[in-house]
Image (cartoon, chains in turn cyan, red):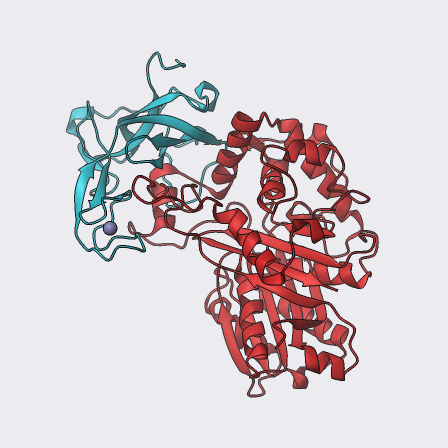
Length: 155
Length: 395
Ligand SMILES: [Zn+2]
């Protein structure tokens, strides 16, 4: 076992343009159609997918960072690539589907440690956090995750 | 003009893990289907192949691959891919050409040789690909989606792991005598509960495996079948439509639903709409069905289907199952073949295999698993990227 010094690593997003990198208050980045006002996540940039709308003007908007747990599951076995396990030996993790009230949509995300599927309950409040997806020698690759709201019915 | 076509013959290669080339499975199924129809390869004037994404270039041009294997003879061909609905889209293409008067005898064939384990996306770094996004950013496997729906059933309707296991126990019994099924063995609730947790709340034995297999049907015009004196089942409806925007249900492989903030979602929902479209085309309702073959990718999904195809009301599927309604002797046996629980999934062959089972059942030759007096059956499935299909077969 050897240790990395956290400060020396470059912190980068796992994908460009899906979320902000503010460590304290990260936000998902969606788009909103300027014509029909509908929301998209992942952000649609080229065209609106509402069949009644032919607009190609979409603007980037921050999505709600809290929502209600629609449902959840977990991975007892390592998913295939392009999934990258953060640890050499795979550790099971939970995934959460969270409903955003304002945007009226459900957005998936991993659930950060130490929370597991046993800490989750459909209907509870969840909040967005930034957490490492995996690390290399030089980089810490970050992604959005959903964590139970403190005092919101769990740990 | 009748919009029906005749299922003149059906054939399958047994499902399993045979480790051979997928073409072999398809050829076996095709030859069996021709024999079943009393026809020969030279009678076929159109071949539709269901593509596989897992066997290189020959898999992407399945129509040509199977035509070459059976012997190139200048036949019209098409190759079709639509995830789990591949076979139904292939059958639909065949039907369209028959009804247009452009073909009389059509071979539809699909086969797959599947690798072990989870279905993985194609290799390469493609951040715009929805399939790449779900694996890389969320680690979402197919069973995770099944897990979400199962947890949702538990939260909304009080479903239990024991209810899910009861689906598997039933289907394992159904498939016991099916010569084409991969698993022909009774499974107990205890064995299911003791199998490893794969995607909470689903255990290994709740989730269907991936299999090798091949299935084929010979479709002809009604006139051709009558001329030949064939007393065979007919395809009365095929529905392979997309969802409508906005789809508020998180379907594979998306990491988010559409937003329903501005546009109202269709009140029926995608999966019920797949069945509804087929009922509408056939001019029948769920009460007219004698059996159904539904896509039990997981045990819990079979319960969803009961409600989505209108066999019982929302939240009633567990009680409906427990009443014995969906097994032999019940109101409407579901998955008399044993379903995916006994087969495992061979993607491009599976929807064709469902139709083979309906045909055998309606002809009354489904030995060891015959639904008494079967006259009308529905098959239905759903897969990645907004694909789903339903087919109604009538005697
Ligand atoms: Zn728009």
